[in-house]
Image (tube, rainbow, N blue to C red; front, top):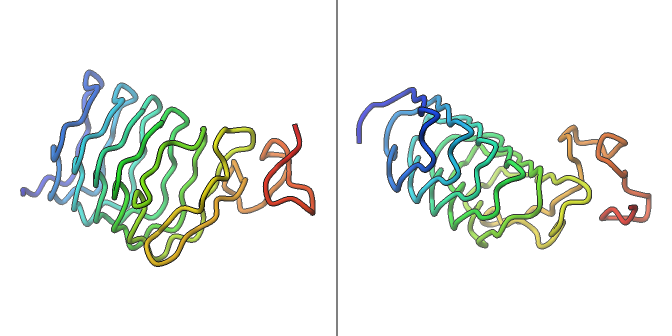
Length: 171
C-alpha cells in the first residue's frame, strides 16, 4: 500500500512474486523479456494503470495479477500458456484483447468484470482458436480471426475468411 507510480523491472528478474506491486499508484511499468511468470495479485488494484506491455517470453499470469486496474487494450504474447482466474478482471475500460499465439489455458473468469470488452482477436493457424467465447462477466465475446487487430479480415491475417466461414478453414 504505497504510492509507487512508475516501475522499471531489471532484466535480471525472471518472476514477479505474489502481491509484489499490488495496491500502488502505478501508471507505467516496464516488464523485461526475462520475466516468464507474473504471480498472483502482482499488480492488483493499481487503479491508474492504463496499459501494460507483457513481455515476449512470458508463460503464465497468476490469479488476479492485473485485477482492478484501468487497462484498455491487451496484447497477449505467443509464449503465454496459462492465464489464471480473474487475472485481467475488473478493468472496466478494457475494450480489446489480442492473442498472437495458441489459445492459452484460461479460467472462465480470467477476463471477468470487464463490461466494455467488445473484441478478442487471434491469429490464423494458432491451435485452440476460436474455442469457447471469452467471458467478460455479464457478456461473452466470441474470438475473431484478425491477427493484426485492424478489425478487417484481410491478407494480413494469413488466410482470410471466406464468405461462408466463421473460422478459417484454408490451409
